[in-house]
Image (cartoon, rainbow, N blue to C red; front, top):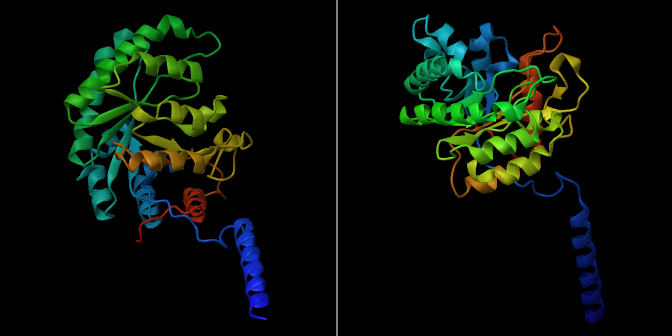
Amino acid sequence: MNQLVTRRNFVRGLAMSAAAVTLPMPALAMKKRHIHIGHTGITWRNDAMEQAITDVNNLGFDGFETFGNVFDAWEQKPGGLGAVLQAHNLPLISAYCNVNLTDSSQRQRNLDNVTRWTGIMKKYGGRFIVIGPNGVHRDSYDFNANKANIVSALNEISQVIADNGLSSGLHQHTGTCVMTRDETYAVLDAVNTKYVRFAPDIGQLTKGGADALQVVKDYLPIVEHMHLKDYNGKDRHMVGYCPLGGGRVDVIGILNVIQKKEKKTPIKGMVMVELDYDNREEITPLSLATTSRDYLVKNGVVFRKV
């Protein structure tokens, strides 16, 4: 009898083990992902940065990113944007700064702008400049004819930023002089990566036809910042982008790769959730940011308690 009971218990144990393998989340313990996640301000209008900072903070994001020209506008106000960030105890992490990489006559203007923006960033505790390439007419654009200027400009701009105490990275973008997978690889393989790091936009990579996860893996040693957004190609109001979890981007696969890297060496910037502003009255920036935050929480990302 005891032998029979033992066998039954053994078989029952095997059955329970097999069931555990097939149980869906969250029936099994959710794997926690401890990775710092911020949010960019582009989901809100530029004149609504105070509301953006309030919402981003209340949702438990770890940091904030805005634009260089937003800094310029806020510097005309007492305390600048830093006063608003400080009031909400939300760290400034990064600024997206547009520069002209193809026109060598714009080089000094680029340097003057990034020097000013870097100074403002340092004043408010920021640490990373996202270098946004200039737009071009893609139907007539010749990348090979412009590559030398792009590489030279990136090297010079990024060294100036480093000399002023911050880090920076190239942010490839649709409709600009560095858009496709091949253009991105060609530039990153040519620049001085001591100064020029990589700040990929995984939604933009996907829209451009690239395998975003593979690109991140290929250049992981120099990935120091990221725009995390999804792409489904459907929503014309947001040029095909959508909240996290609603598109075709392997968001969790990419986060797993970044988390593995951060266990060895923290990235200089931060993973920033991003989604373009939606001008439909029934869609609020807060609702979009909340949807992305909830998707990340559902997949084990730990947010700070507010």
